[in-house]
Amino acid sequence: MVGEVLCAENGLIVIDKTFKNIRKRMKEAIDRSINEANSFYEFLELMQRRQYEIRYDEHLSFKLCGYDQYFRVDTLGTAYKDIAIHRRCANHTEVENKRIQPYMKHFTPSTHKSRLKSKIDWGMRECNSFDELLEYLKKQGIEVKQGKHLAIKPKDGQRFRRIEKLGEQYTEEMLHLYFEDRERYNIRKAKIDSQFGRLLPPHEKYGSRYIAVENINTQIRMMNFMSEHGIKTQADLLEKIDKAKHRIEVYERDIQDLRTQGDKLNTVISAEEDRDRTRRIYRDWQSMEDNSSQKEIYRIRNYKEIYRYQRAEAVLNHYKLTDPVFLDVRERNQRVRRHNENMEEYQKKLQDAQNDLRQYEILYENLRYIAGDKPEIEEDTPEIEEEERTTRRSYNYWDR
Image (tube, rainbow, N blue to C red):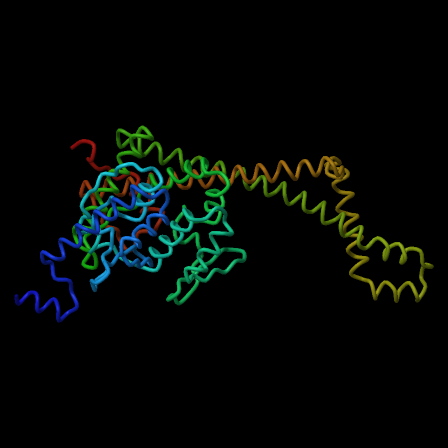
């Protein structure tokens, strides 16, 4: 009795027999509506016909007419989450219902970042194009700023956040890919989902159970990554790290060579544009009588244009002797196209190699953390020497 009074004074729900019966009735009504509906919106209409009021903001909630409290449907189990209801309405298949674990409700931090990601996920399911997604976000109260980088700001946020800062799967390129080529999107997303971060140490801010579950998920991804890349011993991992570093060096050299070639192409193109733009002024100046005051005045007034023409002619004459193919417009356009394709390909290879190296190094540090090998870093030790010392450090994780 005392507990009921305290709950009433603090606006909390009293878990009595009536409360359990209402939950049971709501669960049965949801199941019947899902079986009769062919879409999520049809399901909501059927729930309204069954005298349930709907509140759908961050979470889907129902309230039975004549009762004061709304009930979040996801508290009924995993089969009653928003995504699960969408699937059940579309496919009419039974989904295994599991109890929601306490750590998922109490220890998962709710931040602007997590709410933005949730809104984008919903928008991707509801919309058919990238432009529709932006309009959907605006209707949800999210400000969208388009420019060199796409940025968004939540309704109660203080500043704009570049959308790629939400994670690799939320970059503008990935969102376009989701609507244009779903197969490529799924392949890239699977690779992103398999990535893992560093193991979390105990922290007072989050519950120990939350950290334990996150570390278990990280270790599962680590095991999958090691199996996929054939890493069975410490030597295998160190060899992978060395090969990834070597690949990065090779790709960086190739990209630098491509940039040098691109600079040559841009120099020739700029020289031709300057020559065409200043040709008339230069020819007018040349047509005047030598040593005349009029020619000197014209030269002073148009000094920049005359100098640009002379410099452009010098550049083109140089390439006419060293690489005459550069002056053929058709051949040069083909070179520019091949150069752009090669640059894009090598930049993608470099990015993949850097991502692989990052995962190998995180894996190495995580395994050292599991083995209890925590190095003592000296303050006066230079960064390069510390890196060499860390590479040579041995640990007995696989020898346990």
